[in-house]
Image: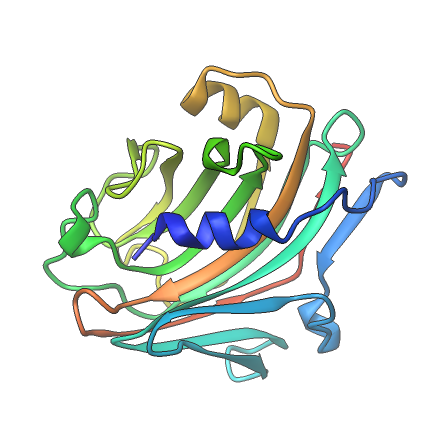
Length: 215
């Protein structure tokens, strides 16, 4: 479940945040076992998040059994300095028979949110969501089933890369322009979510270090 309330919960708590002054901004150094500044938002049941090395490397492990909760970190990142988001992830299986474009099928084994605050007008909060889709083709984009302020892009699909670590590198400004038709200079939070509350299935995923870089 995408839940527009995840976006609201994240951004209602965001104040000014910390600026990005270096050539890289570390969001989550999970390989070092660090989860500092990451907060939990629970919706239905609770996805279990924790550090382990069962995937072949030390990483953040997420395990959902019919549950929906996410982790988020509030930090203002200057995209003029560090526009590229880097991370790695792994899933071992995807979900069966879900329609990810519908409210009833809005479950994913893994997804990464990039959140842009609407400021005092919190209803204008927007989110770019990168997903490991169960069945949509790589490169497909669509509006989240719950709100047009959240737009989805499938970076991986099905079992083709399942069981392996894969790395991602995205220019946030370019992707935001493509999905929203807007130019942005900063983001205000990043969130991670593995959820299966609609389908009642089980999903497990690992998330590697996630950070912004200049190139």
